[in-house]
Length: 126
Image (cartoon, rainbow, N blue to C red; front, side):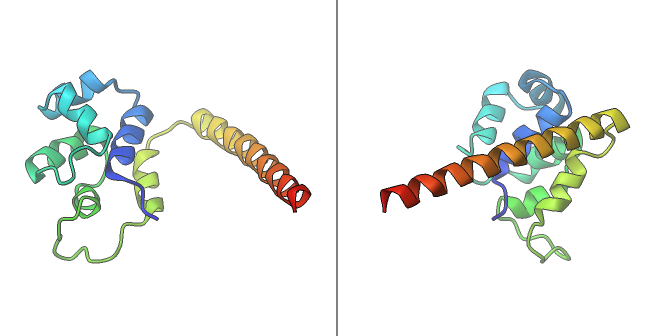
């Protein structure tokens, strides 16, 4: 399943270390409107809003367009989350990458333990 438009915006903003106010100002929109976008309260923002947001957040404009439902000539394939993720994490330092890898390993271990616990609980109830 493709990530929601709002979650992509929020994640991109957080990865870039930008506040909502900084992002909104740089994109020429209000912080309140950005909040609505990040919470998926706006279903189809205009290209005039998407273009500056894409530039500020370093996310491919065409992928944002497709993500909210616009048809983009020459861009007919579905959104691939890995493409968005690559754009979000472009320009991170080696130290940041190492920290992210370490955190991901910890998170996956924790989630695996939770799933095993839930599975064991389900078997006990049967």
